Length: 209
Ligand SMILES: [Zn+2]
Image 1 (cartoon, rainbow, N blue to C red):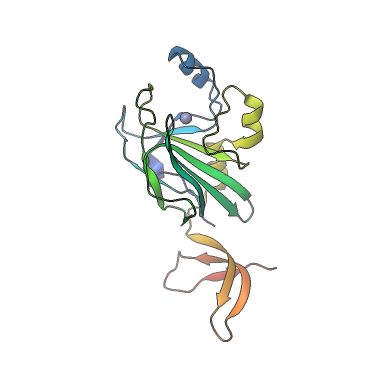
Image 2 (spheres, helix red, strand yellow; image 1 turned 60 degrees about the vertical axis):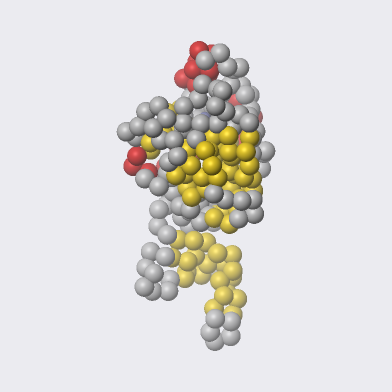
């Protein structure tokens, strides 16, 4: 399986607000916004400030299905992916405040495929361009906003930066539920991992049933 950061240049990621970041409620108070805790991470591109990374590509962190791809008034565009990876099970990744989207609901995307670009959501709000990125362990609505409900956040979300650091796996390996051997008898071999690190060789590892 492949699990990577949502920017194509991971070495340039700057986390400007972390998961349940204590600075976040203070910033909201200062900006005159209703109280809330931060259920995701805000990512920006190192070396930029202000809206300097507006339009920068956002990519899928793992292969999965697009379960939501729509425009929202405050959020801007949101893409929500559903993943089911060996060892990790089902989880969801959400990409919000996008300037535009490049995928539709029902699409299957691979890790590293663009899903949209960094935007700033509602232009009437005091937001600078950034990616709001979440990892969820429940199929809650794409635009869920738990506000100050910390128990809800702890029940349904994971710290996306910690999750990625723990499970980062940049090799081009893709889990497939069904691997079919074309010869000699088109046998269905069951679950396997296709390794594209060596495209000069066919590399398919079968998982024992
Ligand atoms: Zn955010």
